[in-house]
Length: 320
Image (cartoon, rainbow, N blue to C red; front, side, top):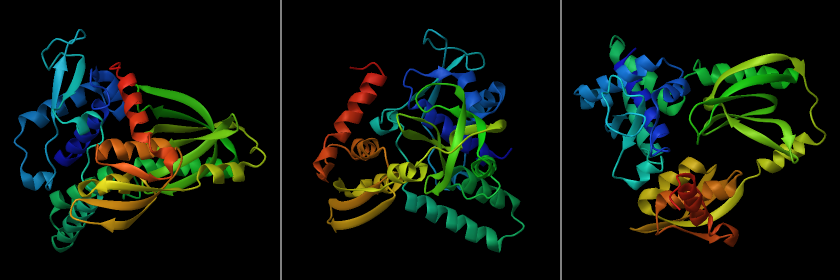
């Protein structure tokens, strides 16, 4: 276990907690990360008790505070508390959407990788590059995602039902379901699998890095008639033109398949971005992140996407 591996895990903990402002049971978060509760508690305590140097963090900032609470929300001994909660005074963190810009992260990785090339005996640096790639850039060929993807790829070819354990984004814990994998895709976000059974004529897409286990089952399935057309339609890119503050271009790069800058000045830029379904939700995420100075230019059908998503978030957290 390296310090950077623990740091990467704390980064994931914060991302989970910022979607649940009232906090989550520590054992549920540990289950989602597939580690023992005792280990996660120890890593959090050690993380905030250690003076982590800027060299170790490779320029990444320390996460916000994690509180340890009793079941009723009162402060509790961190060694005994059953609930953890993220504390932040930044609204973008509360939405769980604050990230380093993609170009900054790539530049950081490339610089560390180059330095490791001229210091072959520096095992700490080599481990840091490996963990940075696996945890933040998903570049490791032998990562868990690729292992699960290999199982799913084989199941697609064999038309074999797979039982997956899937970490839900909006609720604590994990769920199990049997899927019929139709197609596996490698996107900028990592591996994704389009699977059935179809519901109302539509497939469902699962993000592979949220699949904690994949078990092939004995039963096989028949591919639905016209499934290629169905999947093609569901993965058709929709172009949306948006006006955004300069500092928020990273949000489009994160959620869109393609980005083209049409105009740019000191304050704002106009982009044409290609989004995969669900288009409204992805456009809404960009607008919520970018703030009140961001808006859709065309098509008009997505103009209210940011407001719609904001209302959904407020309702989800019982703040309406």
